[in-house]
Amino acid sequence: MSLRVRLNLLITTMFVTILVLGTVLVIVNARRAVLQEIESSAQLALNLLDVPSAEAPLAGQASELEHLRGRLGALAGARHLEVLLVANGRETMLLRPRAPSAAVPRWFERLVAPAPMELRRPLTADEHAATEVVVRANPGDEIAESWRDAWPLLVLVFAVSIVANGVFYVVVGRWLKPVDRIVAALDGIEQGDYRARLPQFDLPELAGVAAKFNGMAEVLERSRAQNRYLAQQTIAIQEDERRALAQELHDELGQSITAVKAVAASMGQTEEVPVVSEGAATITEIANQMYSVVRGMLRRLRPVLLDEFGLVRALESLVDGWNERHADVFCRLVVKGTLSDLSDAANIGLYRVVQECLTNVIKHAAATEVSVTLEQIGARVRLTVTDNGRGFAPDIAPPGLGLLGMRERVEALQGTFTVTAARGSGVAIAVDIPAVPTA
Image 1 (cartoon, rainbow, N blue to C red):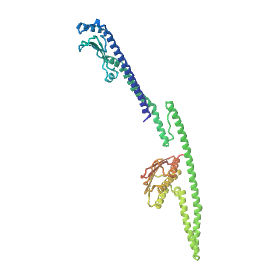
Image 2 (cartoon, helix red, strand yellow; image 1 turned 120 degrees about the vertical axis):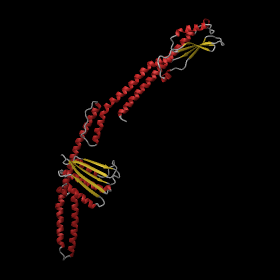
Image 3 (cartoon, rainbow, N blue to C red; image 1 turned 45 degrees about the vertical axis):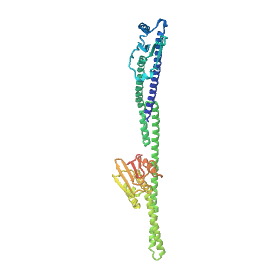
Image 4 (cartoon, rainbow, N blue to C red; image 1 turned 60 degrees about the horizontal axis):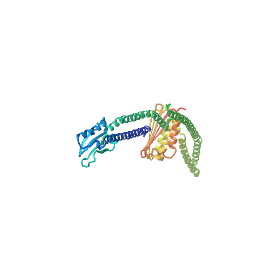
């Protein structure tokens, strides 16, 4: 649940609480007022009827009834009372309550209405001809008056709650809108885009966050540039060392082996001494083995074809030799474009990535097919290596430094390195670098 929704839920809960408390307060006050008004009116009516029996020797005669009605004239405007004369079991209405001045919701009436109230005052002491006055409370008009006073307040509180909640939702949305930009910038940093920057926000708190974020991004960008430069220099030094070592092996050890083979061949021509001839053959065989080992070392250290004939010819030789050594796995090479204007760093970098990928296939993939696709699109070069092996979980990188080394090499060339993998679905490695990396 977003912060915006949570804040609005909090504000809504507060306003609902205020509305409920206000409603309870209005109902309590209205109930108290109605009860007080009813009790006061009923007591007044009884006081007016409380007369000495000598003044009113009532026996149910009309003159006596008129006498009571005259005495109740002071209550002619009473809104809440119903007065009846009960004589000899017969009820005579002396005073009717006024009809409510407004319609009242049933829920309000049920909550405000007091308990039924009925007061009786006997007018004679004769048990056989009992005459009494009954005063009944009728709070309808008082409840209507309370509702007339209460409903504008309740409507106002409800309307203020709705309007305030809506305004708060819109305002908070505008205040929190920069958070989306902050999250997007953080996602960019996570993906390696250290050039991401945040604008100056109006809110002081967010402005401070933006300033700190931009400072962090600048530091990370400088650090990455420095690391990339160091990686470039390290790789360049490594390749120079390999080139020098390969040259030494080719010139010194290669020539020495060739000389040994020549001496052994001349010795083998001496047929008079069989032991010498057999020794010369053995020396020649050992020399050939040493020469094969040296050639393999030379290919691993620095492919001669890469310097003499370019990247495409070097990759073709690498793939052909790999297919010869691994008959159970077939590697297919697809090249698109000329790939003739690549820098030396790009050439050796792409070659090393393919070389490491093929090594990983043999060590970990248990695949039967490998596909290597190399293409140049404008000033960018894309390399894709896929296999149909066992794969691995995306969140669990296989052990070893192969993927890490390839990633560092590609990032040193200012490129991107992406690995797509799933268990049982093989691995796909995608590389995108500039044809000529900048210094």
